[in-house]
Picture 1: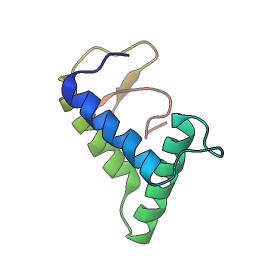
Picture 2: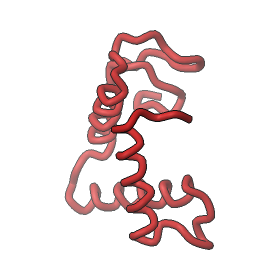
Picture 3: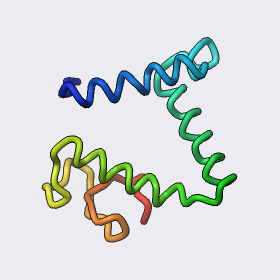
Length: 97
C-alpha cells in the first residue's frame, strides 16, 4: 500500500505508539493484534470518561477521509453502501448495521 507523506508520518506514529506502549510482542505478533488491543483500550477510556466511542470514531473517519482528500460524496467502494447515520459510504461493520 502506498501512502502520501503525511499519511506515512501518521501511520508511523501509530506504529511507534504500539511499540512504545508494548502493544506488540509475542502476545501480539502482528500489527493488527496490537491495534485491536489499542482500540479496545480506547473503548475502556471512553467508558471511564463517559465519551461516545461511536461518535468519536465517526469523526475520526471523517478526518481520515479529509486527510485522504476523499469527498463524502465519492462513489462507494466494492461492498460499501451509503450510511444514513454517519453520512458516508461504509462497509458491513458500519454504525447502523
